[in-house]
Image (cartoon, rainbow, N blue to C red; front, top):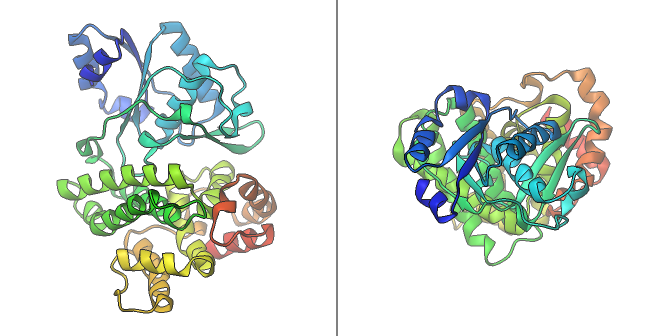
Length: 366
């Protein structure tokens, strides 16, 4: 990292991370390396899971106070999402909500280096950030070229300490990115091979990484899979799973990777009629069916395989996730369905759902 910062002529760096990673000492070696080359640094670690506008504003205030000229995001998707928003708000006016949607940010932010410590979001290579607006009870999806990190430094050794549950959740999240990028109505000849490479890598390495946390080959494979997944979906788009996942995070604070994993089998089953050949290719790529099998047989094997994968990785049903309450869930269905459809992602799905169908899918996942 010091080499890259020297190329950027950086004099002061603000690290964006979370409290757990700071306490675990993940940044210690990085800070020491910067001290050796006379680059000062400060740490902002008040990023919570599913970062909020308040997290972003607090980080922006510290950035302005220390006058750092480069941001370095270290962590999973949450620190990277927060850092992206902080970066662009340095050079663009508040409120952040005015940039919700697609390509609305006028000016580039300050340089951002992204260093992932999980193998999930692929945020280190995407031009997307998702920030929770707690006042309006909505997750804001913002997509803009100015959100793309300038540099991504991917080191699988930083993922070795991930616990089994996190490995499972972000691993299936990576698989979701590859699948949705491949079946999206915006999929294209450039993103297809990257998405399929992501899917193939997950099929080959996720369970080994879960069973053997110190397996370097598996961890490296998953880091590469996450990288490919981010590249693929940021150029073809995510779909219905992500659209339905965001309201679950807002209402019930279910981590993004887990909510995607929980929704994956049911929404895949719903979406297959709109892209059977593509879903059959996903099935074959994952080794769930043979190339001589019919598409109809392959997609049946795919849904069964995704359900079985979740079971083997001990990914819970929605009703078993921490914080879920059936009464609140039932009362939230209408708003969650409307918010999911309004996010824009479901419109890229092979089968574009109605609000009523989204409600039914939430109930199936329960």
